[in-house]
Image (tube, rainbow, N blue to C red; front, side):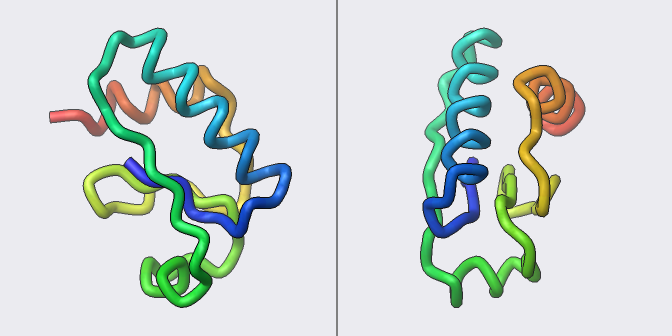
Length: 78
């Protein structure tokens, strides 16, 4: 799982919400943070922050709440 963003406040908040969601769900997932703009663009994301799971962009351009992240994880974890 990755957060795409240059380190702005929104990116940090998305990472914080993601870590809370993973902890609450009891998942053993690593949350990485991609800050390189070329790498972020390679995902097709032009508006950060971005949320990536299994190399699939699930959200970008908004700060997801912890609850939204939990719902995305429930829908997308195999």
